[in-house]
Image (cartoon, rainbow, N blue to C red; front, side, top):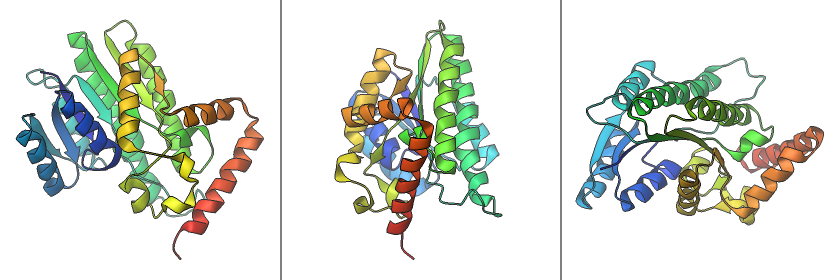
Length: 259
């Protein structure tokens, strides 16, 4: 029986991955900070006949990250798919003297991704099979502050990881979603009306497309035709134009936030 470990598994894209994988017959290791929500989610999957293990972890805590890494390297209970999904919006200014928000973002969306991908990669390579999905963002193709920089790192890191894993039977894929209707944006204070309706995606549709790309061996997945087109433009447009568009989007987002 195949097993997937999903971080940030109780909401948003992480929960959509868990639902999709369980429906396809996978057992789950659910990782998140809220133990009550983890147990609720696990109970639903167990009731449907799936194995569901709970691993409470705060990925800003390096000790917790090490515990998740140890689970990934447990040869007695192998993990066949890692989904590094945990993340959050970073609203702190790049000029802020308070680095707490940036430090937290680094721990969860950079360091934890590298540590967990490395642990999974080592264990999977030893078995000659496995898959790693790191959730980046189309924001990494533009210039909207710290979050864009972090997500650009996720994509480039994953492409490098895919190179190292070539020929081992293990694959790595960066998923670059656009705006997805989840708790992520609500927690960030971003309303659905702050962006055009055509740019919003459904989480379950997004994950279904990502899993198809994973089976095809794609290294970078950008679900939906509209975002593929937008990212083609982003890759080929002058960077000065990308900066102007990014500033306009940032200004629009700030204007939608409550005072």
